[in-house]
Length: 170
Image (cartoon, rainbow, N blue to C red; front, side, top):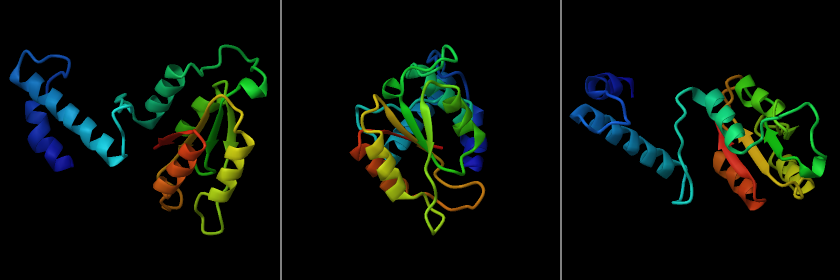
């Protein structure tokens, strides 16, 4: 990836919001090709969106909190039945914790199972317990920076979607 970026992208790089030049057009094409590859890789449909935020997972989560209108406007939260709920793993980076802590959502930490993987039984139980919430979100690391254990993203996303929850990955 780094060689491709250095050899193919950087020599032709320009702002993506202009197609008045060959370099602007090429950079726009690179961006749209990347968007298509990402969408295909995660099984996105025409109803889904790949949004680039330019500042990693931290920026993406902050952007999503704002897009969903979840930023806490005061220290007083609405009643629990009116609050969204966000499920995270016990090994999440602060970039996946702090935006939710400062939102109006309730944060639920899903434990690990005996193998060190996300406990799918506990996740399903929590999804059932919070089925009445207006919005349910699973926001997990695809792999732990601490243990190196990869999460079964397909199994987790399938479970989240079965209960109408959004599936977010870092």
